[in-house]
Length: 95
Image (cartoon, rainbow, N blue to C red; front, side, top):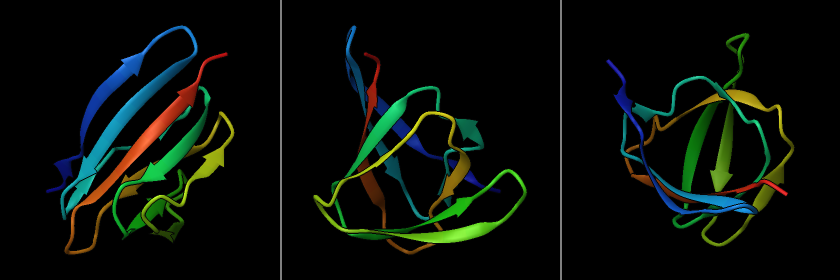
């Protein structure tokens, strides 16, 4: 059984929503679709498993402070199949 990832919204205003995500080993976000463009800022090195809607799996390497951006419409489940907690900030762009 997969454990749910933990999220805490830190800022939510007219321009952005900033959420801290913590994925302990064995956890997942669950399949979801991003409704806004977003930026991910890793707070720790780690490795995420990304599962596409068709079940295709890929690995994403996270490096502390090395940000990346994605467009709205991305669909996936983010899983932590490693032995270390994954921590990142997700900044969704509303404007």
